[in-house]
Length: 505
Image (cartoon, rainbow, N blue to C red; front, top):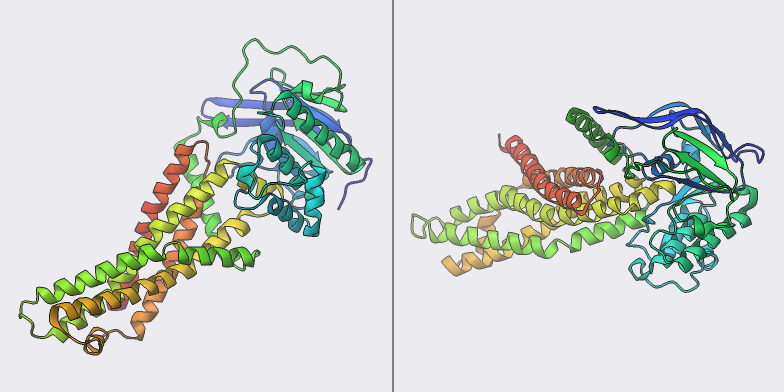
């Protein structure tokens, strides 16, 4: 539903915004009353530390649920929808943001990024080339990595326009660009706003006022001392700043005094939510993405799993027969015991270890990097659930690929075990197979499948949870990778231990 043209795009009614911490409150807004008419371009400016990025997160609902949420008083309306208590789902897609880090999906091509926005908006992907051309990217390179700084900004604009947002917010769109390139981006933003007319309202958070000179319809001045927002004419002189400016903080850093228990409860709640999403949203929204992920998770760890399991299986058989205390007697019995232990217990466990070490590390690094570079936030502002796009493909891929990788490892274990048995005792392949599989039955197969499917599911959930936590540095991404490997292996061990005791207890 589109708001009436006469209604303001954004309205603050006695609005207050503050973060609580053990050190006290950090107030961003206090009793703000302000209306922004539709169809205009506004600049949001203010001193460092005044809370511009916090206002962006409030309007686009980009709060990190693992960090304490701010305390909001009064009312804030976006397109006549109140957002102070709960953010309406109907605003997703209607309100979009182009983040300072752009949030371009690295694994998609520039055209693929725009097509993703078009699909979510229910529009034809054939419009992608036109949008790219409109943003000044008539012939973009094949990969996002090849884009220059200015081209990345243009691509982010094209992707945002794909969703036809009614409120479009830019966070420092000219940051890192020279004066000429910054002016070109500013003119592109103004042109797209002018072409949209009353159908869109644009807000630009910026420190680069010269780049937007003569282009804005008004300036929103965020007064850090008064905790107020004032709407000024575009050519009005800005109030003088404080003598003691603060460093801009993100929401996580602005509330560093809250207790560790609060962090733990938020993290535990986030884990429960991830587990809930993994179950309730299991039918895939992006089946092609799921299939590609399944294929990759089968191929990537295959060599690692096969070599590891084959080596263990061959060596176990070799030493079992070579160190037979009866000096060659009862070879069949030794092979029967080895086969049961290897096939029912040891190889599935080791395959789970090898698979988890390879996949959890890669998935956690990829997702953690996406979190840090605002790619996850970009999915959210497009109205795409990260659980649908990232979690569910990971869950399906791990739950399917771990059993298949285990099967590959078991096959190669048999090959190397047969070779080792022939080398030590001269037994034929037929004689080896009769002895090796004598005690392996259908129950073993069922339990191996159960162990690997459950392990794959839990490793996927755990990896996603760790990767989606706050990522303010590369160090935190690395910590998530290490935790994913260690906890993933422990998870495999616990699942296999419990089910093995159930089976044989």
